Image 1: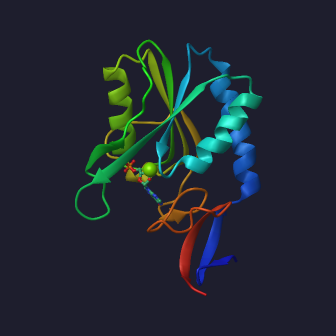
Image 2 (image 1 turned 120 degrees about the vertical axis):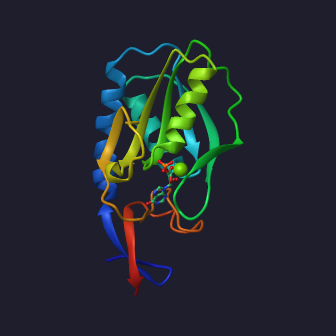
Amino acid sequence: MPVVRGKNIDVLFSPEQIAERNLDLAKQIATEPKEDLLVISILKGSFIFAADLLRALHAAGLEPEVEFITLSSYGKGTKSQGVRIIKDIDSEVRGRDVLLIDDILESGNTLRFARELMYERGARNVSIAVLLDKTCRREGTLNADFVGFECPDYFVVGYGMDVAYAFRELPFVGVVTGDA
Ligand code: IMP
Ligand code: MG
């Protein structure tokens, strides 16, 4: 079991599993024709997934433009209640196909906000790709179009995801289980 920062980390999804799944996802995404595709990575958690998925999209024959938006959930405790824009995209989305990339779909509040925002701005179609889906935590009916893995109800870290800014560099997705 890997030890990082003095903590034991249980590996849930290995680098190899993730890499293989990214290629599958990219192939799925590329099956439908795209109109002036704009891929938007939702920061900060999705930066590593987006970097890998984008290269898989290239391998699958797509030629997207790429943007970044930083969104933050606010509200009491750990439950996301509202979402606000910390740093917006610069690009025009009117008439374009947009693919939103995020690390985890949990309550759905973040992605619901992002999708509505892009439709309000005139996007032709908005689809959603997430590495992990915590279906059991969903509030409302939002679903992703492309899901890497169903995620058990643990707080996960690694592959871009953090606890207080730590553990983002891990090449796998894991769960902190305790002191080493
Ligand atoms: P939602 O708005 O409830 O769907 O929350 C999704 C966001 O919460 C994700 O984009 C993540 O940034 C964050 N998040 C949810 N669960 C976890 C977790 O287990 N580890 C790290 N971040 C998480
Ligand atoms: Mg996030």
